[in-house]
Length: 458
Image 1 (tube, rainbow, N blue to C red):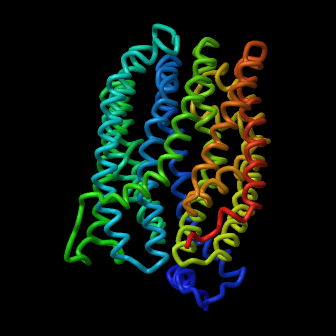
Image 2 (image 1 turned 45 degrees about the horizontal axis):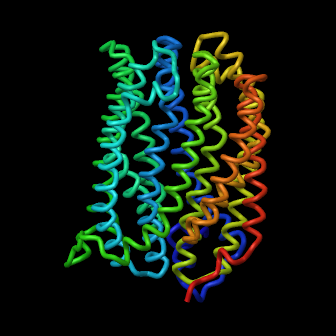
Image 3 (image 1 turned 180 degrees about the vertical axis):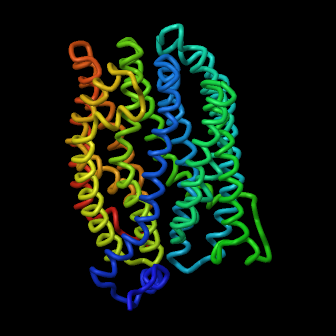
């Protein structure tokens, strides 16, 4: 009889039990599949979302594309703050300290909430000026400002959703947060359809639809974590401390700050690249945005495997099992690279059809197809970088991997984009991206061969 996910996770936390290769692979697959489904459905829903704007006008799509990297920047900061606490949850669960895990979650709710509120304030202040700084064409500036302002107001809601979902995943409950995030994507499409096409609100409708979908999902996610989860529900504690302690904040800062710095600097590079693309015209901006949406179908399964790797490596570290940390890392690496290589082939073959789903504009479809077929060759390298980085996050060793990401995108990608874009346009930018992803994947594979990342601190 095949063992359940919970039985296999109990073997991870029990330091006396040896796991076979088959058991390890089964556990990674059981944790990865729900997350993969959620990630892929998220991309599909984002593609539908983008298609709604794409069928209105190129200018409206370009307005959203102009600020998309800035939204990723703020979202990355929220994710880093949430990771600082959710990784600690994995370590406590691996050590069978459930009370400690619940304490970290409560403290994280206060700290992450306050941090994301600060980000919201900064985002609202920056929104009116960003399109001017990026030298965007005048006809898309006002729409970009409106969209960014509303989405930034949703940052505290998004951050709490990330904390709750990350905590559930790190405890081994992958299925529920994946289902709820899939629900969020469906709600986003439904609300956007109502606001954009039925109420004729255009870009504002897309922003309001996203805000409402975030809000409903976060309420459900917090309810599942705080009230219903069998390991982490707050009713299991008689004393419920919410005030963050110095030691918890210090650990969260140690784990999360390199991630936040990396996300900030990398998104800063993405914004700089957007600045390179913006003068190429609205067709290039729209093709770049839609191309990124389509490419998500390739790399989101990799993120599903990566989330499983973070959970298993984190719990193995809490259980003080270096052998499992390394074994789970390499199995996840092989699985992630295989899946993304296959998805890269699919993207190369069906790039025109994927682009035509999002936009009817022939010039945007043609340019998007060209850049997607360039990027398809880099998917295995991208997988190596995604999975290895998540392994290091689970181990709590985030500083060096974050610096590796930063150096790769700034030195390799941005430099090549500056060189290639003037003569090759958007294709040059995506060639630079493909070369950089392959380089980054190789460096992360080399880092993973070094055993110091899995050393258990005594």
